[in-house]
Structure formats: C-alpha cells, structure tokens
Image (cartoon, rainbow, N blue to C red; front, side):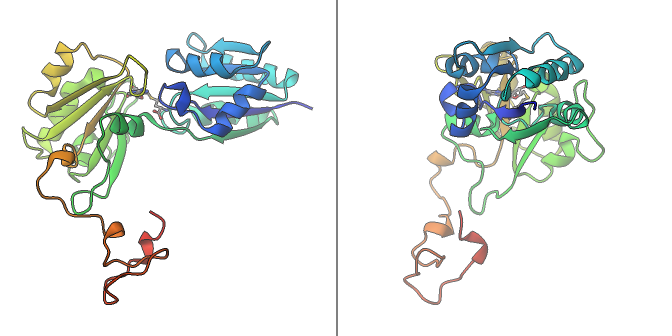
Length: 271
Ligand code: SAH
C-alpha cells in the first residue's frame, strides 16, 4: 500500500500562517518536497526528526513527480509544500495528473495566498461597499502568455481591485495597461515584497505615476505583489459608506433590524 501525497499551501512566508491542517500533515510526514526559499522555514520548523526534506528549486516537473512517487512507496504521508495557495500559479494539475495515472492518492490543503497577506500587511481591504465588490487575481504575460481576453488592460477596465502576481519585473507593462484602461495618474498602487516575512517585509505605497520609481529606489525587484485598487487608503478617507452588514437598520440571520422596514439581503448572511 502506498502513501498519500498532500499538496499543502504553506501561506505567504510567515511559518505561523500555515493552516492547522497543513502543519499537522507536516508533523506527520515522512518526506517533504518544498518550493524554493519562501517556504523552507515552515518545512524545517514542523518536520519530524528523520523526515526527508528536499528543495524542488533545481528539479524539473518530471523529477518532482518521480520523487513524490518514490517517497509515497515508503511513507504514509508525503507533503508537497507550496507558497501561498497551491491552486494559484502552482503547476498543481501538471503534478497531480501523473500521480492519478500511477494510482496514487493525493489531496490539496489550501493556503493563505500572498494577495491576502499583502493587503493585510498594509492594513488595507480588498473590497469596500459602494467602491468595489470585486477582486481579480491575475498576472501579466511573461514566458507564460495570457489567454485571449485576459490582458491586464481589458481586466483593468472594471476598475475593481487587481492583485497582480509574478509581474514586479514587468511593472512598466502594468502601469501602461492601467493607464490605457483609464486609471488616473494619482490612482493609488500598493506593492508588498515578502509579505508576512518577519523582518523582511517591505510595503511601498505610491501612485500610478510614481510607483515604478519608488520600487526602483527601494530595490524591490522580486517576490512582490502589486495591488491596484480604488479601496487603497480608505482608512484615511473623510467620507465612507458603511457596510450594510453592521448597519443597525439591516436585518440578517443573526440579528434583527431595529427598523423593521429595513431592506433584507439574503445573500449577505454569512459575511
Ligand atoms: N501560490 C502563490 C503564488 C505563487 S506565484 C500564492 O498563492 O501566493 C509567485 C508570486 O506570488 C510572486 O511573483 C509574487 O507576486 C507572489 N508572492 C509570493 N509570496 C509573496 C509574498 N510573501 N509577498 C508578496 N508577494 C508574494
């Protein structure tokens, strides 16, 4: 009987931001294959004595699946540890298909993605009532081309929150696309490098006009999230529409409104 391979989201970097389930699996694992420098701390902190730990940095996809298959013959629990959430830019399906073909059991444990960690680090919000209720997680084309209809210029036309992964070296292309989509020169842009990393996190706040220069000055050229959003800076706005959820005149499942004529929004009962 071979073991099970778990694709675990390690979170954005701070080892405390892994899920309880992810940590338990690491503590039980016989072998861990981790993805690069951002997650080695979680791997080494929670792995049991004698656990086989391998960095996948220099491995091809075939070598990785080969290694995982080999370990699954020897251990009941094998972990593939990935940054953030495994389902975002994680080559998950490329790795799971050969496992399924080989009859090996596998499952995914989600993780805190770096977009969430970056926004949290800056004390910002992804959504704000009457400002934007939509978040797009995307990237610009690098070696991986963007599918039709998904170029940043088209997505930016929504003027919602954009969390842009894998694109810090292409910041010129990001700013070009936002301008082409009609974003103002003073539109706020947030860049966070190594979000949640103790002692290493850098938070750069700028505008469409100056964010590139600020990132250059701060030498932020890798491992960074770009957030463009009309919500940025809302903590300092004079006028702010209040969330209906906490409005005393708004009824939801767990609280009756003071004013019984108040509007009811059944969609909002779980927020
Ligand atoms: N699965 C990961 C993303 C992997 S792609 C996730 O859910 O976060 C790698 C990109 O993620 C980087 O180019 C960068 O844009 C972003 N990233 C990963 N960790 C980060 C961190 N701690 N701070 C800021 N951005 C990060």
